[in-house]
Image (cartoon, rainbow, N blue to C red):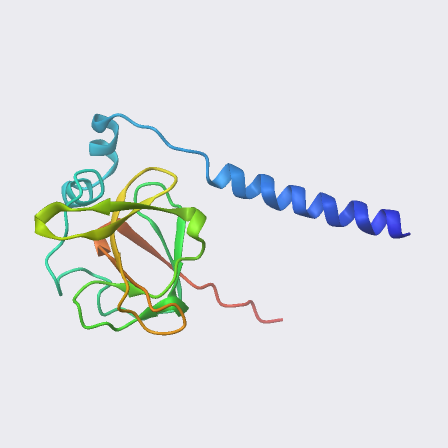
Length: 159
């Protein structure tokens, strides 16, 4: 019986790992393919490392239950329970769903030193992370609305 339980546990872990690795397969597209898939503003932000003006994005003051995915590839990035009102004018989160879903890069553009955040799966520029966020992490992921797709939390079906 112990052997069967151990087998099922190992099988479950392997299945979960395979699912996660499938989800994290890299996506490579030509710039023409990205232009066809994304709006002009989404392309400017995610592929050209642009930013939207503060207080203009659709998610900066948006607090529904659900999660946020990369607009370019659907990579699951942030849960709504990690979103907070920072007052900076962009959607802000204190932690990602997993650090493995994001890449971090030193950014010295515009005369600043900061940490750029990109999607692990497709390389889309998402925004930046700063060390002035709330507990428990002290981080503020300042993310462009145009780089995100919100998915509403599904309500359980009633019996």
